[in-house]
Length: 435
Image (cartoon, rainbow, N blue to C red; front, side, top):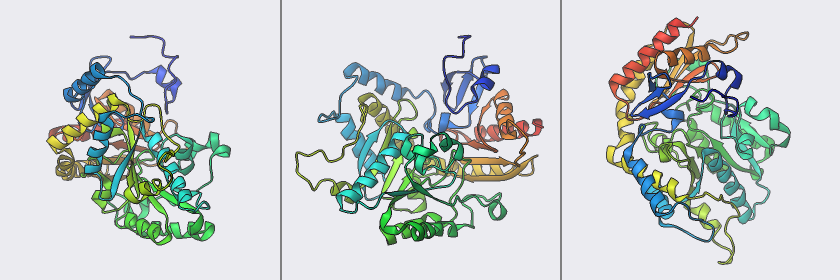
């Protein structure tokens, strides 16, 4: 193994702490990684919310290899290749009704920035140039582009660039431990948090607001669930005041909640949906924006020889990424992975909440195949207890994700009930063993 670990500046990582005791993954198959010391590590996080169909899928590998043998790259500026059009059509087939167009990108961050730019440009082409304000939410994560950071609400992700971010307003977050701790599924209390949008409208004026963007489930900040009725209320307010509603489904898309998209699961009609991660099973980076037909058509009213939208990326619709995504969709359709996730959700929920009462836990929350375990904050403690439990999990053969005082889990949708039991057993042992 390479001994010099200093060259790679790792993202979202305390690099010096990592180099003191590196955790290296060298192989992956099914729902397991293998560590550099030869141990099997149960993947409790689907890589990073993305390997929903499990690791080492030969169908995706073979599709990528065939595409590389056929054509490695093709531009999509004034040119096309068949796979990009086929993928867009396939995504529309599974998208919630009304989302009939797809803008392809290369990551969740790019998908979010693309959606925000489309929203602003949409109002301009309709003659409402004053609609320039974007609304995000406290504790939200919408990637690391400058647009995504502006609407994002995690302070540490913003502070170094605060002075150059475009103006944005932020809704209250939805976490309410006093009323909703240890809820099973979506919390009962908190629909009124959506009414915070009315406060923002009163302050800024509805005529100045372009769009509201929220994650159905806020993942990176520690899995904050939408209270029952919350997203429907946001939709009502957006419709009432002429605001676009963008759902960031980078982590909730592709079966994670038991449906293809959380918008479908929760019965919400979005104007745009951003997606990434699971679309290609993490094999080749890809992102996309699903766009409502009326928004797309607003850009098609000018001269036919004009560019409709001055936005895009060199690798938009990359043929190898499209091949990976199409093979991933084949697996999802054939193995009915969203339905499989729905069928496992009750067993997953029971296993998660069986850990209630373990030392330090102040909340357990879940929906679909997502779970979060929140530990009591200890202000003088660094790193957090959650981070220590994360390391204890890895030593025992389980990959978790630590974020602040929360451990989050989002396993591949191919996980079995026995492996779910194994996951929560290891987690319980790790919590008990961590002072």
